[in-house]
Length: 325
Image (tube, rainbow, N blue to C red):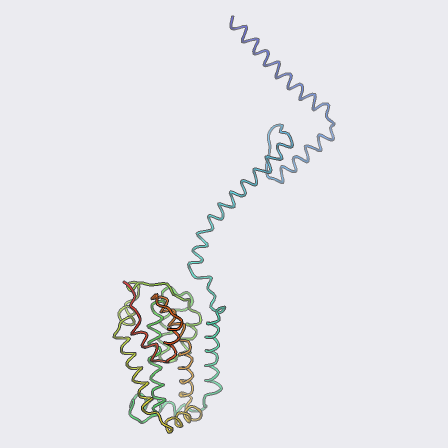
């Protein structure tokens, strides 16, 4: 007896399916052909614009809702994924320091002006045709130092141009790692002979290194020579000696002789004086960065250190705290 019951149930389900298919067929027959074709064409165009395809007969309003929601959710999630994938690249770019543009910094533009002014003084202000005199002057300064044979004011100034590059080396070498534009050592080495002519372009283009560094991460020469207190004491002592030598030999005759050298006799005297002036004015940036690197920066203190040329920065090397290991 259960078998006839199953057959009758199957017949009822089959008859119900035939009723639904016949109703759909009657609907498609009775619908106007142009209207149905236009509706299908517009629906297909909307589907192509939204990037969604359908299978089967789905009501137009429902399919529009699905087509609107699906692309927006997928595009927003795709945007989030792309943004997340770009974040590490942005972090690498910002950490590499590519965003730093030195020629947009007012302090770097001031250094450019100083470098151009120094070159202009050497070309247009310094006496011309003094090569032989300057050669003999250098020979006397090296062969008989502090003997009274040369002008004492210029002799003190000339020897100060050996102290200032050494101080710059002690200030800049702890932040010399990974400088992208110019290496640090060649300009520093050349500055002992060429002064700001060689050091100026490096100071203009270098990137600031104000974060603390460990002493163990420095090179051997920086760690054992330029960070050492004996090196700092030697430079400070020599700077104080030069200042005392100039002060004890200060007189009207010495001043007039220096003015005559500057204006008439020696291009070396004129250019060396201007060079020391520009180097002293540019010292504030290097001293400030070194103070920030050691966690003791104070604008007033940095200005006070640089207010006394040659001697002040040399004394800072003695007083500054050591880098941590």
